[in-house]
Image (cartoon, rainbow, N blue to C red):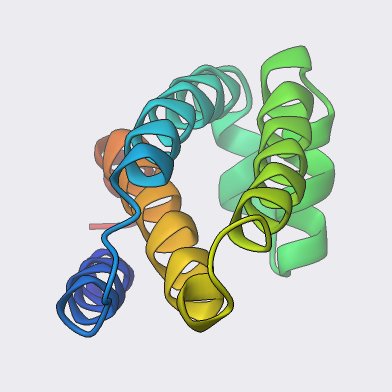
Length: 125
């Protein structure tokens, strides 16, 4: 839950201090983050026990990559990151960092918000 707050705070701060609002990139980030979140949701549903048994981030990544949905989710993350860098450097130089932070924060916030309820069900009570 704390990570969602962090992503949202980074998005809000980057937009407040932005001279030009990268709204098109944020819309793209929200849509792509939603798709990545749905893919991760499917991967979590199919590998719940393996995810609970994972102790490290690399083990979690390995479990996610064991399903097509998880694999596509990871590919989508990298595809979006590359597109974000290209789009950010295509604009005005003073807005590049803001565009990167706002775009990735929006993507990560939506992705994590979509998959969070499934992950909370996996947590020990």
